[in-house]
Image 1 (tube, rainbow, N blue to C red):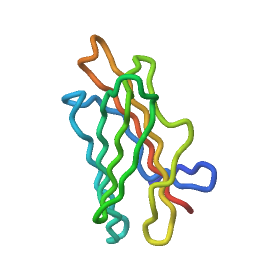
Image 2: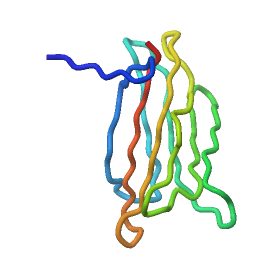
Image 3: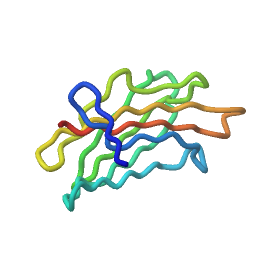
Length: 118
């Protein structure tokens, strides 16, 4: 049996929730589609006092680096809507990202959904 999930004209191609081994370590996503390599997405989590929660994006040499600033709330911090990160095989890709601190801030739970335009 094969199941596909769609939302708002996009196919959900990946979705996961997991606990990071180290709450400050980087998260690396390798994305390929039918032999076409999108590149890598590296996600860093950092705390900067007196700065609002935000994501800064930097695209360099075929890789996307996302710096998630102050994603340190026990109730979670993340994107309010999926944001476009590029395209693969002529189709737009979007990413939704959410992060939580659990316990005494020693465990980070991350949830993400990756969307591909139909």
